[in-house]
Length: 270
Image 1 (cartoon, rainbow, N blue to C red):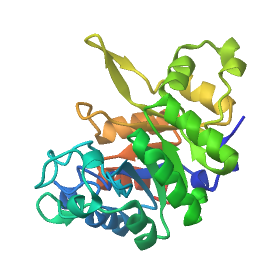
Image 2 (image 1 turned 120 degrees about the horizontal axis):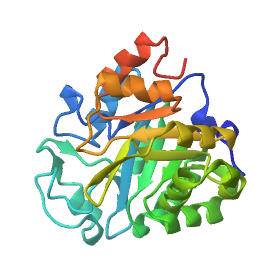
Image 3 (image 1 turned 90 degrees about the vertical axis):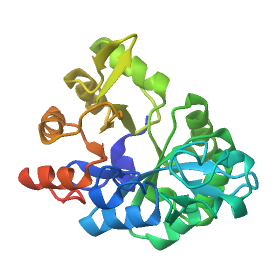
Image 4 (image 1 turned 120 degrees about the vertical axis):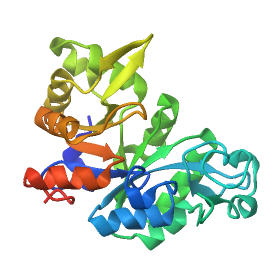
C-alpha cells in the first residue's frame, strides 16, 4: 500500500499549497487560466506546486488545458482531440496567451511540482511517455476522474509515480466506517477531494474529520479543491486547515498564501 511519505511530491513540513490552473481567481490571472503567464505568476508568489490538466491533440501533442474544447477560454473553437497541434497552438487563452504544451511547462519551470489531471484517454499514453522521457516522474502526481485511467497509470508505472485516488476509491473511503479501513487500502498516496459535493439537490460535506482521520491512518494525504459554486474564503481555508488536510488546491492563491502565513507556514511546506 503506497503512502505519501514514499514520494518526493509530498515532501515538506506543513500543508501543500497547489495553484489551481495557476490560480484562476488571482487577479493577474483573470481569464488566462492554464497559461504560462498564470503559472509564472503563481511561482512569483512563491508557489512550488501547480495544478494543471492535460489533453492530447489529434496528432498526439499533450497540452496543458482543462476543457475538451477551445471555445470557453480561447479565441478559437473546436475539440482539442480533433485538431492538429499546429491549429491548437494558434489559439489564444483570453485572446492573448498561447496554450502551453506539457513539455514546455516542464522545461520552463524545472523547479516546480505538477499535479496533472489527465482529462482524456487519448492523453494518457503520451503523458506517460513525456514524463518518462524527461525524467519527471518524481515531480508529478497524476490524477483523473476516471478510475480506469488511474488504474492504467499504476499498471504501467507501478510505484514510480504518485497518484491520487480514483472517484470510486474516494467514495468507499468517505462512506466506510473505521473497521473497514484495512479493506480500503489503495495504491494512491493521496485523496484529492472537493470540499463539498452536490447530490440530488443536497450539498454533502466531503472533506470531513472522519475522512481525514481515515486517510491519515493509512498514511495518505488529503488535498481539497473547490467546485466553481463553492466559496474559497479565509474562514473556509482556516476550517480545512483546522481539520488537518495536507494540501489545498487553490484558485485564490494570494489569499491562501496569506492564510498559511498567518498560521506560520510557507508555500513550500516550510
